[in-house]
Length: 229
Ligand code: CA
Image (tube, rainbow, N blue to C red; front, side, top):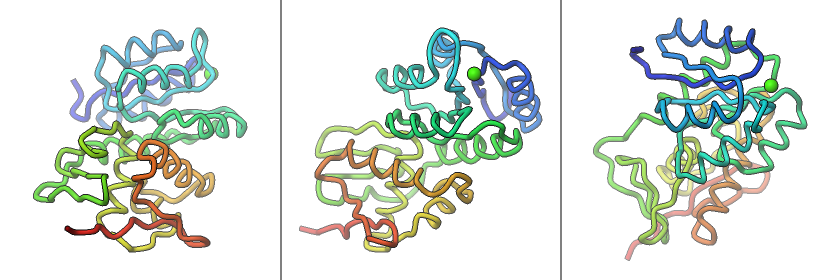
Protein backbone atom coordinates (compact mmCIF):
# COMPACT_ATOMS: atom_id res chain seq x y z
CA UNK A 1 0.00 0.00 0.00
CA UNK A 2 0.97 3.58 -0.52
CA UNK A 3 2.17 5.81 2.26
CA UNK A 4 -0.15 8.70 1.44
CA UNK A 5 -3.39 6.80 0.96
CA UNK A 6 -5.50 5.97 -2.04
CA UNK A 7 -6.78 8.50 -4.56
CA UNK A 8 -9.81 7.47 -6.60
CA UNK A 9 -9.71 8.75 -10.18
CA UNK A 10 -13.06 8.58 -12.00
CA UNK A 11 -12.41 9.58 -15.59
CA UNK A 12 -13.61 7.97 -18.84
CA UNK A 13 -10.75 9.30 -20.96
CA UNK A 14 -8.05 6.71 -20.49
CA UNK A 15 -5.07 8.91 -21.50
CA UNK A 16 -6.04 11.44 -18.80
CA UNK A 17 -6.63 8.74 -16.25
CA UNK A 18 -3.26 7.12 -17.05
CA UNK A 19 -1.48 10.45 -16.74
CA UNK A 20 -3.06 11.15 -13.35
CA UNK A 21 -2.15 7.68 -12.15
CA UNK A 22 1.47 8.24 -13.18
CA UNK A 23 1.80 11.62 -11.43
CA UNK A 24 -0.10 10.59 -8.30
CA UNK A 25 1.86 7.38 -7.82
CA UNK A 26 5.14 9.27 -8.25
CA UNK A 27 4.06 11.36 -5.26
CA UNK A 28 3.42 8.28 -3.17
CA UNK A 29 -0.34 7.98 -3.54
CA UNK A 30 -2.06 4.73 -4.33
CA UNK A 31 -4.42 5.10 -7.30
CA UNK A 32 -7.65 3.33 -8.12
CA UNK A 33 -9.30 4.19 -11.43
CA UNK A 34 -12.90 3.86 -12.54
CA UNK A 35 -14.28 4.80 -15.93
CA UNK A 36 -17.96 5.42 -15.31
CA UNK A 37 -20.28 6.98 -12.72
CA UNK A 38 -21.70 3.85 -11.06
CA UNK A 39 -18.22 2.29 -10.77
CA UNK A 40 -16.93 5.51 -9.26
CA UNK A 41 -19.72 5.64 -6.71
CA UNK A 42 -19.16 2.04 -5.62
CA UNK A 43 -15.39 2.56 -5.32
CA UNK A 44 -15.92 5.76 -3.33
CA UNK A 45 -18.06 3.78 -0.87
CA UNK A 46 -15.82 0.74 -0.57
CA UNK A 47 -12.19 1.78 -1.15
CA UNK A 48 -11.98 4.56 1.46
CA UNK A 49 -10.05 7.01 -0.74
CA UNK A 50 -8.37 10.04 0.82
CA UNK A 51 -9.55 12.11 -2.17
CA UNK A 52 -11.53 11.69 -5.38
CA UNK A 53 -10.73 13.25 -8.75
CA UNK A 54 -14.11 13.19 -10.42
CA UNK A 55 -14.82 13.94 -14.07
CA UNK A 56 -18.16 15.67 -14.67
CA UNK A 57 -19.08 14.03 -17.98
CA UNK A 58 -19.11 10.29 -17.28
CA UNK A 59 -20.97 7.33 -18.80
CA UNK A 60 -23.77 5.86 -16.71
CA UNK A 61 -24.01 8.65 -14.16
CA UNK A 62 -22.83 12.23 -14.20
CA UNK A 63 -19.94 13.12 -11.86
CA UNK A 64 -22.18 15.73 -10.21
CA UNK A 65 -24.69 12.97 -9.34
CA UNK A 66 -21.92 10.78 -7.89
CA UNK A 67 -20.89 13.64 -5.60
CA UNK A 68 -24.47 14.44 -4.66
CA UNK A 69 -25.13 10.84 -3.65
CA UNK A 70 -21.96 10.65 -1.55
CA UNK A 71 -22.82 13.85 0.30
CA UNK A 72 -26.39 12.61 0.81
CA UNK A 73 -24.86 9.55 2.51
CA UNK A 74 -22.80 11.84 4.73
CA UNK A 75 -19.60 10.89 2.95
CA UNK A 76 -17.36 13.98 3.02
CA UNK A 77 -14.28 12.66 1.24
CA UNK A 78 -12.54 15.58 -0.52
CA UNK A 79 -13.71 15.83 -4.14
CA UNK A 80 -11.95 17.66 -6.97
CA UNK A 81 -14.06 17.99 -10.09
CA UNK A 82 -12.61 17.89 -13.59
CA UNK A 83 -14.66 19.99 -15.92
CA UNK A 84 -14.37 20.08 -19.68
CA UNK A 85 -15.83 23.52 -20.30
CA UNK A 86 -16.53 26.75 -18.51
CA UNK A 87 -20.28 26.10 -18.51
CA UNK A 88 -19.57 22.90 -16.58
CA UNK A 89 -17.66 24.97 -14.01
CA UNK A 90 -20.76 27.13 -13.61
CA UNK A 91 -22.89 24.03 -13.17
CA UNK A 92 -20.59 22.49 -10.58
CA UNK A 93 -20.41 25.74 -8.63
CA UNK A 94 -24.10 26.54 -9.00
CA UNK A 95 -25.30 23.16 -7.78
CA UNK A 96 -23.62 23.52 -4.40
CA UNK A 97 -22.66 19.88 -4.47
CA UNK A 98 -20.09 20.12 -1.77
CA UNK A 99 -17.10 19.90 -4.10
CA UNK A 100 -13.81 20.96 -2.56
CA UNK A 101 -12.13 22.16 -5.70
CA UNK A 102 -12.26 21.91 -9.45
CA UNK A 103 -9.93 22.02 -12.43
CA UNK A 104 -10.77 22.76 -16.04
CA UNK A 105 -9.49 20.58 -18.89
CA UNK A 106 -6.94 20.64 -20.33
CA UNK A 107 -5.14 20.72 -17.00
CA UNK A 108 -1.58 20.10 -16.03
CA UNK A 109 -1.34 16.83 -14.06
CA UNK A 110 1.25 18.52 -11.88
CA UNK A 111 -1.32 21.15 -10.90
CA UNK A 112 -3.96 18.53 -10.10
CA UNK A 113 -1.53 16.57 -7.96
CA UNK A 114 -0.53 19.75 -6.10
CA UNK A 115 -4.19 20.36 -5.31
CA UNK A 116 -4.75 16.78 -4.17
CA UNK A 117 -1.77 17.08 -1.84
CA UNK A 118 -3.01 20.37 -0.43
CA UNK A 119 -6.51 19.01 0.10
CA UNK A 120 -5.39 15.77 1.70
CA UNK A 121 -3.00 17.60 3.97
CA UNK A 122 -5.69 20.05 5.05
CA UNK A 123 -8.37 17.45 5.60
CA UNK A 124 -6.02 15.48 7.83
CA UNK A 125 -4.88 18.38 9.98
CA UNK A 126 -6.32 18.47 13.42
CA UNK A 127 -5.26 21.47 15.41
CA UNK A 128 -4.09 20.18 18.76
CA UNK A 129 -4.49 22.05 21.99
CA UNK A 130 -7.02 24.45 20.62
CA UNK A 131 -10.32 24.92 22.36
CA UNK A 132 -13.57 24.96 20.42
CA UNK A 133 -14.56 28.43 19.25
CA UNK A 134 -18.17 29.50 19.62
CA UNK A 135 -19.75 32.36 17.75
CA UNK A 136 -23.42 32.65 18.63
CA UNK A 137 -24.95 29.20 18.09
CA UNK A 138 -22.08 27.96 15.96
CA UNK A 139 -19.25 26.00 17.58
CA UNK A 140 -16.12 25.08 15.65
CA UNK A 141 -14.08 22.27 17.18
CA UNK A 142 -10.74 22.39 15.38
CA UNK A 143 -9.31 19.44 17.30
CA UNK A 144 -12.01 17.09 16.06
CA UNK A 145 -12.77 19.01 12.88
CA UNK A 146 -16.46 19.15 13.79
CA UNK A 147 -18.95 21.99 13.64
CA UNK A 148 -22.12 22.27 15.69
CA UNK A 149 -25.17 24.42 15.27
CA UNK A 150 -26.57 24.43 18.79
CA UNK A 151 -26.45 20.73 19.71
CA UNK A 152 -26.71 19.51 16.13
CA UNK A 153 -23.59 18.57 14.20
CA UNK A 154 -23.33 20.14 10.75
CA UNK A 155 -21.61 18.12 8.02
CA UNK A 156 -19.09 20.19 6.09
CA UNK A 157 -16.64 19.44 3.31
CA UNK A 158 -12.95 19.72 4.17
CA UNK A 159 -12.79 23.04 2.37
CA UNK A 160 -15.91 24.45 4.03
CA UNK A 161 -14.51 23.47 7.40
CA UNK A 162 -11.10 25.01 6.73
CA UNK A 163 -12.62 28.24 5.47
CA UNK A 164 -14.88 28.58 8.50
CA UNK A 165 -12.11 27.64 10.94
CA UNK A 166 -9.74 30.11 9.30
CA UNK A 167 -12.22 32.96 9.64
CA UNK A 168 -13.31 32.28 13.22
CA UNK A 169 -9.70 31.79 14.37
CA UNK A 170 -9.26 35.56 14.02
CA UNK A 171 -12.66 37.06 14.67
CA UNK A 172 -13.17 40.51 13.24
CA UNK A 173 -10.17 40.31 10.95
CA UNK A 174 -11.13 41.05 7.36
CA UNK A 175 -9.71 38.68 4.75
CA UNK A 176 -9.66 39.44 1.04
CA UNK A 177 -10.69 36.67 -1.34
CA UNK A 178 -7.11 36.39 -2.61
CA UNK A 179 -5.85 36.03 0.94
CA UNK A 180 -8.38 33.29 1.66
CA UNK A 181 -7.40 31.42 -1.49
CA UNK A 182 -3.75 31.61 -0.59
CA UNK A 183 -4.21 30.77 3.09
CA UNK A 184 -7.04 28.23 2.97
CA UNK A 185 -6.71 26.60 -0.44
CA UNK A 186 -2.96 27.05 -0.51
CA UNK A 187 -2.60 28.40 -4.00
CA UNK A 188 -3.55 31.43 -6.04
CA UNK A 189 -6.75 31.51 -8.02
CA UNK A 190 -6.62 30.16 -11.53
CA UNK A 191 -10.22 30.78 -12.45
CA UNK A 192 -10.86 33.82 -10.31
CA UNK A 193 -11.93 34.19 -6.74
CA UNK A 194 -15.58 33.18 -7.05
CA UNK A 195 -14.78 29.77 -5.62
CA UNK A 196 -14.43 31.60 -2.27
CA UNK A 197 -17.88 33.13 -2.72
CA UNK A 198 -19.37 29.77 -3.55
CA UNK A 199 -17.94 28.13 -0.44
CA UNK A 200 -19.14 31.03 1.72
CA UNK A 201 -22.61 30.64 0.18
CA UNK A 202 -22.54 26.91 0.97
CA UNK A 203 -21.54 27.59 4.58
CA UNK A 204 -24.31 30.14 4.91
CA UNK A 205 -26.90 27.77 3.53
CA UNK A 206 -25.81 25.10 6.01
CA UNK A 207 -25.58 27.41 9.03
CA UNK A 208 -28.55 29.61 8.17
CA UNK A 209 -29.08 32.71 10.28
CA UNK A 210 -26.42 31.52 12.73
CA UNK A 211 -23.64 31.88 10.14
CA UNK A 212 -20.89 34.02 11.71
CA UNK A 213 -19.49 35.07 8.32
CA UNK A 214 -20.10 38.62 7.29
CA UNK A 215 -19.41 40.13 3.89
CA UNK A 216 -17.19 43.19 3.92
CA UNK A 217 -18.26 45.00 0.81
CA UNK A 218 -15.49 45.57 -1.70
CA UNK A 219 -12.98 43.70 0.45
CA UNK A 220 -13.87 40.16 1.39
CA UNK A 221 -15.10 38.32 4.48
CA UNK A 222 -14.74 38.36 8.25
CA UNK A 223 -16.11 36.32 11.15
CA UNK A 224 -18.17 38.03 13.82
CA UNK A 225 -16.42 38.59 17.12
CA UNK A 226 -17.67 35.97 19.61
CA UNK A 227 -19.88 37.30 22.36
CA UNK A 228 -19.14 36.11 25.86
CA UNK A 229 -21.64 35.56 28.63
CA1 CA B 1 -15.60 12.67 -19.60
